[in-house]
Length: 309
Ligand code: ASP
Image (cartoon, rainbow, N blue to C red; front, side, top):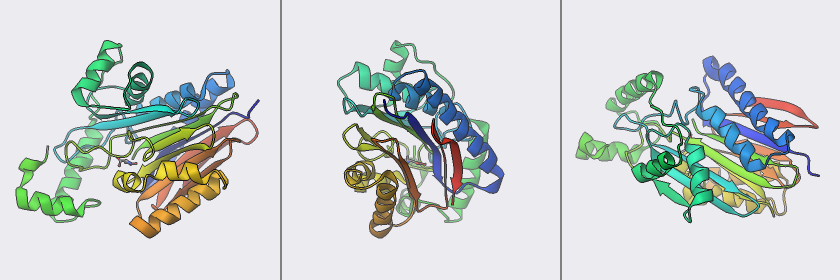
């Protein structure tokens, strides 16, 4: 029997002091929730879905309710899930009113032939299966959006400098922190899941790495599981989750995470974090952002959590 393990994260980026305690308590709660299922003998897929749902329902995280808003001021949430046993996986994107995007991703993985579904049609599938709906746009995010728009008006854009040029030349008419979990269950099956509101002030219609297998997440029982957080464009261009998994063929989970982030820093610069889990239940965490908020739970080591600096 394998030693069941879960590791969850609440996003890479800047975790201000005022939010660190609630962030840590949120990831601890999610890890505890997922691990409870593993201990009951449930699958790693059940565990990662439950852990991510917990964080989607917690407004401190940029996923589900609490998602950041795009440039036009509305939510377009993405999520992905992958089963390391079957190597089946799926993502959903551009969701506005599905309460738990991760459950819709699981539904696409288990009930359809597809690996990515987006927008209204994806949400209609969820409705057909009775998934609950919710208004994902919370007042706190609307306030942050207004402040970010003010910075934008002054020419300060946190992430997307080319978008800034585009907005200036075309006007506003063109316009329209992520969570993740990895687990291994007692049968040695790995799973990965993630969910996000995306990067704030993204262009409407932009899909990030989180629903893209290989970029935002990957799981394969033969090698390991990984999930990324940060600027999705970097994760997609460098296919970082698959790279980190491949690295675990010869390296430990921590070495694979560090090697992947070093490569990202060299090739694409700062803005990414990754967590990894290998076939023996050993995990790794690395990032080149100011912080990464994570928690892990195993029988041997108990609950470990950190806002990683
Ligand atoms: N990776 C996510 C995205 O680009 C954002 C995040 O991790 O905070 O959509």
